Image 1 (cartoon, helix red, strand yellow):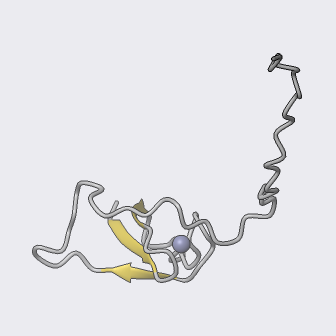
Image 2 (cartoon, protein in one colour; image 1 turned 180 degrees about the horizontal axis):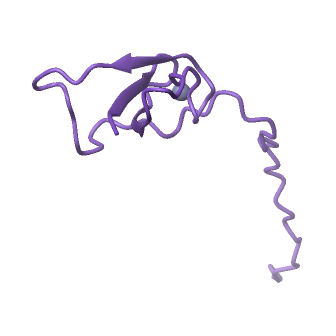
Length: 83
Ligand SMILES: [Zn+2]
């Protein structure tokens, strides 16, 4: 079975997919559901190691827990500053 290389045009996520010829080509990125483009493995283009890999670009994730709750309860302990 042939191996196709895809790369996302949105987040740059690249991966390989083993597909049959009868399978439809992938079009959406599994990471961010962006548009994929098929990368033809020319010489010196195939990076086997995940050298460049951006993981912190999650585009469409629903629950964003960004509640900046920086109100630390400072318990006013009466540290004795007696004279
Ligand atoms: Zn993507």
